[in-house]
Length: 119
Image (cartoon, rainbow, N blue to C red; front, side):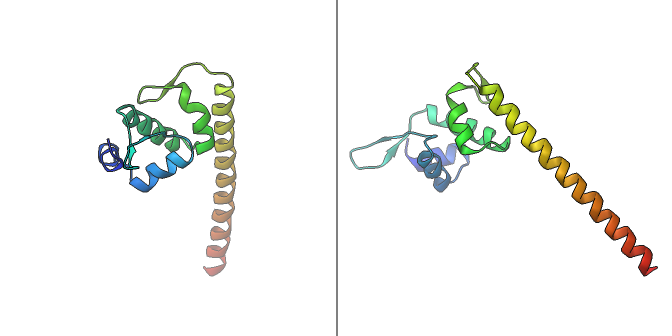
């Protein structure tokens, strides 16, 4: 299938599909006319990529994990270091959440103090 059809079937813009290709996440064949030619498996691969991106994973992490992905979930076959990558990303997200929570609390304090002075 051509890139436009893959885009239509997955809801992913063609420029994003080209980016996934540049990152090594998609590998279409090339027709004699030079057009990208995606197999049926590309639909599943794009859905897996989107799911992993929604989990906050980088394209580098996804490139490592994609060969281990199964189904649209994606679920994973056990691959070496896979859990380390997932747990590392989760720790990073938890750290970011903690930082944002502290920032929010400080801003609330600033707002409360300013409102008390204004009253």
